[in-house]
Image 1 (tube, helix red, strand yellow):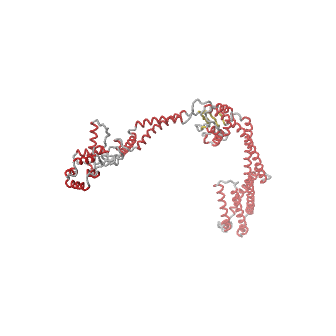
Image 2 (tube, rainbow, N blue to C red):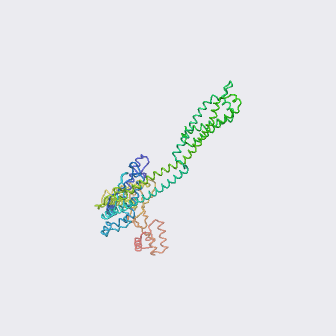
Image 3 (cartoon, rainbow, N blue to C red):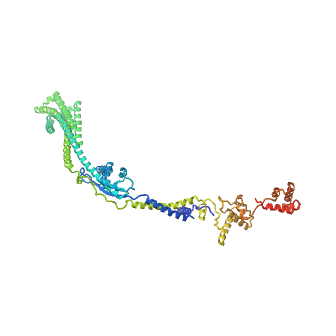
Length: 620
């Protein structure tokens, strides 16, 4: 038959199903013939696993109560939706949880009368409870809801009364610690706030002294009033200057000529005058940019500096124009009216006054800038002093009532009761189930490992693993006392089938039958194949190559004796020359050696019969 289990022509899905079926058959093959052992071992191991799993843990009792940690909303306008994101509350809760499980609280709990009384009645067969084991049995669970403030506290032990006494002693010790901590905290807060008020008052006094150094004879409001007054004077002078410019504009031209050339046009021919006008234009553009684009007001230091520069340039232009008019002969001939000359002189005086006002306003602005920061710091310190004094007053009103839980942020729940049933009963059942399931599959696994180590083929299905071997056929196992004709017919058919495949498969005339171990049936198969070949009329020679066991020889009832020549020579029945002559004659004539010895008279009948009997007693 073909040695290929999968030819590669099947669809991909069929090949996967075939591989899956082969793997399943391989696993089932490991249990073939061993199902009863696997079932027995699985039941035994499942029972043992369930017993070990259930007894792997002892009964544990858990006493439970709760502690509520209230959030402090004094610093926030509304309640927090998710307290886990409110850092002050998280910090407060973590500190209280550490305090509850601290060594100090555990030692105080173990010193409580209720715990000492229970410890005296605790069963002797239970393990001793130390500070470390006591602390390790404490747990505090987070609330399920994100905005919940109640935390569950519990204590676990093998004895139900021990769990109850431990959790109640813990609550009592924690209440004492918490009340003591509250009292200490209020006192520390009062001392801290008092020290801060004193420090703030010293800082405020130092700032007031600095303000007096800058403005010794005035206060900030007077400085602001003076600056506003000077700014108003400057604005009025600027309005008057604009009116004078409008009045002088018609007279700033040459009246005695027929052309329209003005004095300003003649002045523009002077490079110095033109440079002053360009400088004024640049300053005006800068001032417009500061006031309209940047939005700076008239009290801004940079705006005031630019305004002083503009006033200085205006004064230089006016001086240049006056000097030019006085020195130019044509302007003298123009005979300007006296009121115009008076207006020009007045304009010069007003420009100087504007420059003086700019200087005074800038000085006041600098003082106000230096003092305003100090005033703001002094005002902030004053507000903090008032707030701290108000807190001190509240702490003093509260410190006498810190023992009442109504004003505490920590609310301790009622005492715990003795638990009625073990806390881990369900877990022990689960462990028993896991152990039983594990033991059940372990029983099958061990038997499958034995089958994996046993490489012998005991069943027809075992040959499915021989993918690289040509299988001629499979012979059934027959009992020693074969009584059923059908079994004999099946065995004969299998042997004839194998013989037919050997005849068809090639031109070989010599076949060897072997096996890796004794008793596997190679002698029986060689005998049966020899008889099958002989039944077809083929000349058949069956050779037993097992020189030690000689199983084929015994099965055929055939014994090969030593040659007669060797027996005669060994027992010295003839001399060597006579025996050699008889052997040569036997070989030449093809007659048997015993007939040659009798006819030649070298041995009589009695001697020859004795030699033949000796030969029958030998075997190769």
